[in-house]
Image 1: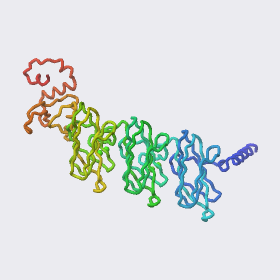
Image 2 (image 1 turned 180 degrees about the vertical axis):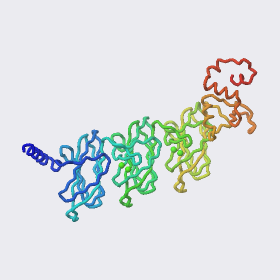
Image 3 (image 1 turned 90 degrees about the vertical axis):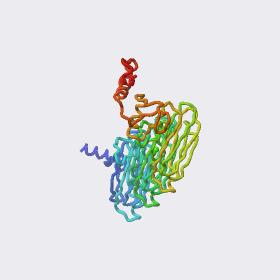
Image 4 (image 1 turned 90 degrees about the horizontal axis):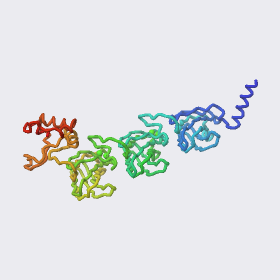
Length: 464
Ligand SMILES: [Ca+2]
Ligand SMILES: [Ca+2]
Ligand SMILES: [Ca+2]
Ligand SMILES: [Ca+2]
């Protein structure tokens, strides 16, 4: 009897202090939606969650409502932190609060039912907060808050969806260079979106809007090294009757990455620029209207540089920048098939060439190829027959750079009638040449310290 009385008193005290919190609350998992129902105007649903990070955000959404609701957020001392109202069926609302770590309660209460003759109504609730969770690899959810942000790799496309007009998709990037550029693109949109870039302290660095389906936008910002958050949120959906929409996101920023050998991507920023060699042809493509292709070259002395852009499938702008992002020259190609060039004197140093789409929307162009070549002073020997678009190009460039092969220097080129440096890539390699390359690669000291026994013998001559 005593024990029953004790338990009853305990329940009474709890009820007195916390109202309905004395009844068992259902725990919610971060980012996992729950469906619930209230069956009378006196009915209340209480949910509990615990966060593990001070100053993290809790983002709560209530939608798919069968009637009006009041949405309340309390801390563990029963202090009301936020409350929002949905006045009628089909309405939705959300709460976003920065909170200390601890245990919290969400209470869902009928609102405005008597006016609408409602006696029961269902709803869907989702709370995203700092706690352990696993990202879904196809939806990247949960990702409604910075604490649940999905990490993006530099220069990669991510296709995702805003599942509802209350969905917020947050992505994280970490840059490793002060004063590097973050270039973010949002395209392939099924509805309007806002694209936001935040610093670690939740300050907005930049935001852009896409007002309707098919639109695209980009953000380019120079930022100190650190952690940043990109957020994609629905924009202007109610005007267009949109309830969910796909998008594609890409962020290029200073961080470890590898260039794709055929596309030279990522290369949207100076920090990801593809290094080019003098006098070689680079065939590439602007994959979308937001694509920027950046190339880097370094001259070893003051001198002239000559840059050409041709074999174009659309309009382009060709820009030459110095190391401090100042434009040295820019030229335009307004339509397919045209070409342009930049011819300028450059002081010894590092420079950036950028190729960007120009005038595409007027011509309905979605992607376009081009061919780029820059001639400038560098340390490398120029070979008249060196190409970088052949099956042998990559290996040959590597062998030249490693000084394994030097080709035929200052020989008569029967095609041009001039004395030039030639690689003769289609010639057969002699045994002597092959051995020479092998020794240079594996045992270069030995060649330096070896004297030919019979200098007239061709093997000896080649190795020396
Ligand atoms: Ca989403
Ligand atoms: Ca989300
Ligand atoms: Ca490209
Ligand atoms: Ca690019």
